Length: 195
Image 1 (cartoon, one colour):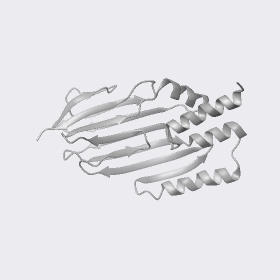
Image 2 (image 1 turned 30 degrees about the vertical axis):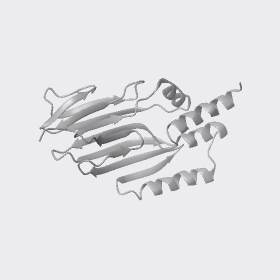
Image 3 (image 1 turned 90 degrees about the vertical axis):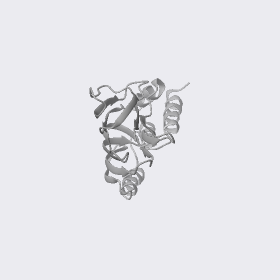
Image 4 (image 1 turned 45 degrees about the horizontal axis):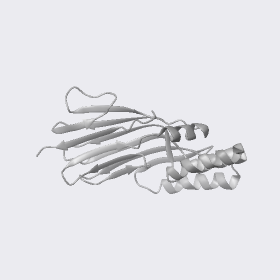
């Protein structure tokens, strides 16, 4: 099989898997859980458009029309009130700053990566999609290395059911920290607020 069709299939598979949306690249994300179970969240860093990266690999460069289309996408992103900054930096990369608030029980989905949701029994789950070995290899072949961090601040009064944080406070409340980008690691914390 020729390299070009193989590369194309690999990149398309990665892009399809990631739903063709922006992929977080180098970033820090945080969620501050409030005592009423509402939450504030923030994301700062870069993200890439996998389909544009694929085109760059196929063509060597992106056409002016393709660059303009990617820049226009940044304008569309800025229409979302939670997006404080969205700048197209060239080479299929964006610089993003996103901040928002979710009411108690309202789900959060950020860049198809980070989610927060509450179940009917009052358990809140905050998780990040795991990076699979094949995905990481495909992204690395495309020149994309995911390197991020997540911090979840938990207030007093929360019962921690489970977590796999890289660092955690001795008591239940405080900051839980994860490094994101390792194969097979799925950052997750489950908690409940006792009445």
